[in-house]
Image 1 (cartoon, rainbow, N blue to C red):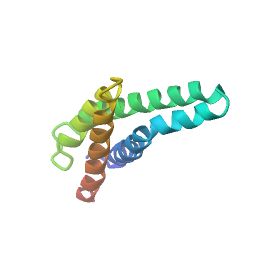
Image 2: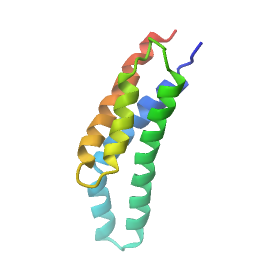
Image 3: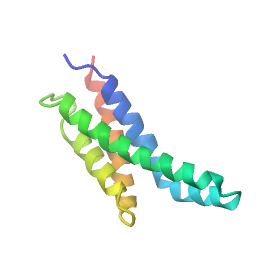
Length: 113
């Protein structure tokens, strides 16, 4: 029997991570206003977050394969969202897809007992 912690983690990371990535440009700009020491850390944090969304989507596909409670849409949205978020000028599309995938994971939690 598949458990729900992975679905909960994917939902939270997809939703919150997508929102953080969506506002990441302003986060980097805010780091640039002060001293320049925080820009590199901010860029590395956002890159790790993009890779985490992609990785959690892949883990969700493997773990919930054939499980009708989750389906494939949230996993595919996280994978595509994480992959597109890595592309510089198309990143905003990936961020929105990650938010949608994360929210779908959170709505599927009610299927677990």
